Amino acid sequence: MRFFFLFLIIISTWSYSSAQSQKTIRNTMYMTYGKTGANLREFNEMLANKGLSPMRKGYSNLSFGYLTRFNDFIIGLELFHNSGPKSDFGDFEIDYQSTRFYVNVGFAFTEEGNFQLIHYMSFGSGFANFQMLRENDTNSLDGFLQNPENGYLLRKGDIHKSTFNLSGFLTEIGFQMSYDLPIPGREEALEILARFGYSFSPFEDSWNLNGINFNSIQSGAFLRLGVGISLPDHNYFYKDASLGAHIIYGMHFTKPDEFNKKLGENGLSAFDGRPNNWGLKVLGETKGFLYGFDFYNLGLSGPASETKSHTLNSLRLYGNVGLKLFERKNLELGALGGLGFGNIRYSLTSNEKPDFPRLFEEPLHDGYLRNAGVMAKPELYFAYGMPILGGSSKLMFSVHGGYELPLSNYKLEDLSMFDYMANPYLQFGIGIRP
Image (cartoon, rainbow, N blue to C red; front, top):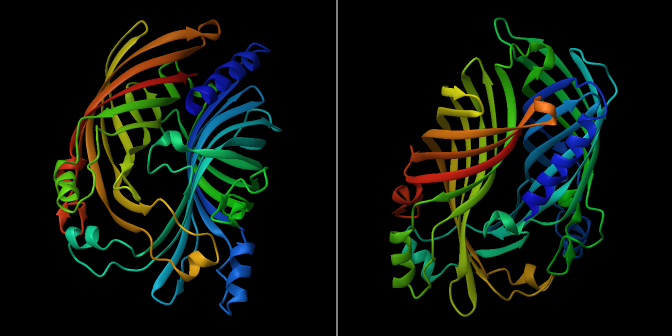
């Protein structure tokens, strides 16, 4: 229920701040990319004791976010994917990734204008994955399932199971500088932004994995650059321009039937049910033209045998454009088309693994398969807006229905997952439209 808890914080904080004075509003959706400094000190000490070179420092950040300014108060949502540098140790490759979901709050030092200087603080939860794997020698799914032990996977807050598994408490303190460039003939502006500050996990050993502290893969000083679309309040023209953020819950009407058949043939348990997801949708509108992005994660998980567990996971990221087809009072109907990225990931993991340094010396416990490609979708949505804050903003309730169509084959070894990735879906959303 973390998403609902964070969303209630946003609503209550927004309502309080908006009631204080005459409103000045600026909404922005953006993406950033940058680097964070990090040193895996305890793991590198273990490598040094074995006469091995340390892993390289630092990791990259890719984020998608939404930010709203009410007078001088700032609030928003942000999703991160962070990737560490890869290191080779013999036949094995060591890598780590992490994910974060943040609520951002802050204060603007500047008055409303093209240049913005913001001080902000973020808080939220995350996921950490540290792995040491070698290439799979087989070229068939049967061969992999019969002999999957190619290394080890260590996870905390495992979003491969579901989005609800985000774990820990993460914070970030930073500054944002941005500048708006007018787009001829448009109410929106192109925003160029830079962020710098420090990310950290405030509780010691909160990211301890098998006897080693990996707090640093969620921490460090950072510098990020990005671009976005900004909608300043002076460009609202008879309320025909908006930019809102929505939390979505989706049901996907598909099952991994062929994959389950392969699992049964190799003595493993099948996955039950259908994949559901929680995610973030940002949707903007100018004079009936719709644009935005979706970000959500589908997961299936369960026991594979008495000693192993497995997950089947897929991440989806879409850029969307469309048209509003109908609007009357607080009701609206629209159509969207999306094009984006999707992946498919299968993990087969041992329930019992030793701690370091023995795990490093005896790494053969888990297996992992992955493929990625391009996805497309048509979508229809129906929404109802409940006026709040004196009618100047709306609390949006929406239903979205569509069909996801993979434009790649999405093979796991020799088995195509196309039929699993192609599916109709139904999503329910709740959000804020300033």
